[in-house]
Image (cartoon, rainbow, N blue to C red; front, side, top):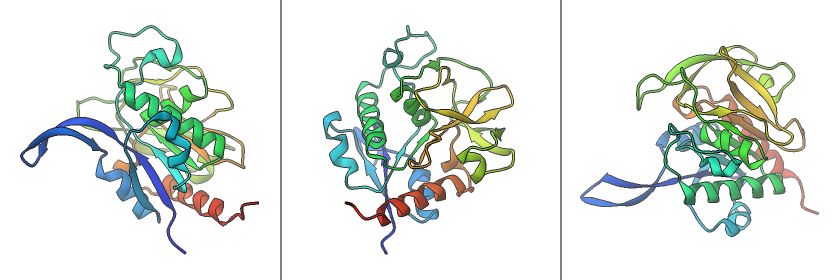
Length: 235
């Protein structure tokens, strides 16, 4: 049986390290697809596209990972811009929110990572705190802190212990999106994981960066859900 194909979102940056070229580049850190591969899947990168094509693109993959990255535009959740919020990434916001809504509609297994978790929350009508302190110390360097699972959640079934995780964010979930429940907290009370409790849909978001860690449990569970979904006959 072929390994499940997991789509990973990318983002466009003006790259100055692409050989002799200084061109817009669609990219994602290698840790994302390496984690998918280590957990038993195959990875395909999803560059930004027209939002109306989201369902068409997702029809060709078995699972979705929405990667980390820049702040969501607060207009997406009806909030005025905090001066500490980063510049809008309009094309990425539109594409990833469309992917998330299409994946939720279709029941596609999905994992949101850092920004991806925040985008999941916003896609379901939630809001974000635009600045918190203490979840990264040095620009470009991950911090590590413990997260505590919430008993009875999917995440707690995967990782039952308090775990040290690599983190790098300055925004966080404020009001939960429709249907989401919290499945892990940081010591300061910051929401560190959210999920849909519906057992017929595998939907999880984590605020940290599992692609910067050696722990494959969360990604392996996404792969397992993708395998199970493809094994179900289509009526």
